[in-house]
Image (tube, rainbow, N blue to C red):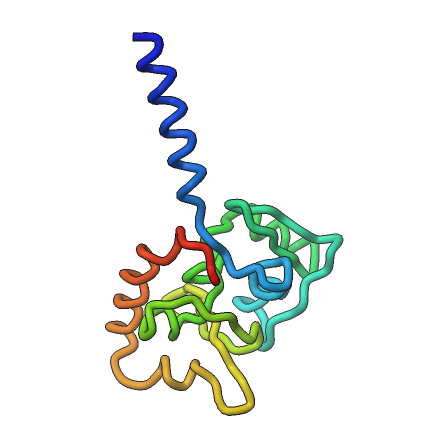
Length: 152
């Protein structure tokens, strides 16, 4: 019985570690180092500072102030971007992870969504066309499959 308990513990420990969410940390931090709290309380997101950092769920976050760092630490799930900080449109419509432009975002239903943008255009506009609620549901479903896969 002791061996079964030990083996079960080891199996679940390995399983849980293997199931870690893959966050978009292309520049070393989620949201390219922008302060995820600032998206909710400013007209424009603010870049974070190295002296105000936090680790959450195996990913690093930067903040523009101690106050925002404290707010994040009180309720990180409120501020963590949807889909690990990858482009929401790409997750929903292409079922793939795509990097983002941290200044292109939307707060919808109290959640932060980030989007890819280039000189050609932004995926935020595509996201907002048509039935966004349906697109969110599709993104949520796709994210369940994508969230544990490392980005390429």
